[in-house]
Image: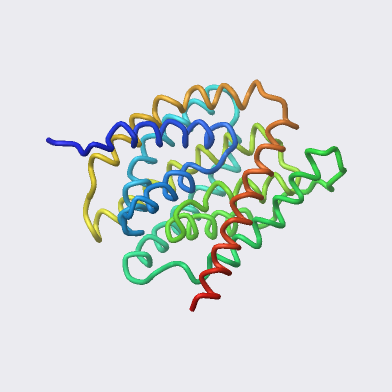
Length: 253
């Protein structure tokens, strides 16, 4: 089996994306999908490749977080099952129609969450409260993750942290639940368009699996304020960039 000249680049992308995702609870799909799309790959193939690799990387990451005591089982179930259903629906929809229409609204929501998270990091008191509709959150995050190329972590993690969730437990549980969601999305893509770009999948997989245990260790050791600041800045940059890009695209129409 022959691999493209970019195979080692795919490994590096997977490694860097998983280090960020495992430590901050988001951005594997966003980082890897953004780079692959910039290389000229079609959206459905990108999402299928990334989520196939994520089945393995999130399995290792979720297991590592569980061993480190970072997973809340009750929250895991409430997120994972609806997330898998939403992910399967989103994956099927992406194989039928483009999923760009809803993106500006998603990133506007993330921008608001980023502000709440940065306020927490700065020491401002944010009223803590449990997210009452966790299954709805899981479903929406799974739906956007499949159709938007990486919405699981930003939507699920950001919402739970903005509502005052424990940083370590939130990141660990969301990362573990992502395995179930990625599996559902990958199976949906497989039955609709088959397995494509095997070299990309393998490269992302190798890099991601290598980085997963390190990221799980980091989230247990690094201070909550640092993680909140990093998460907030990451979501802020992603949301602002995407909103500006959408506005520019709309202006050119």
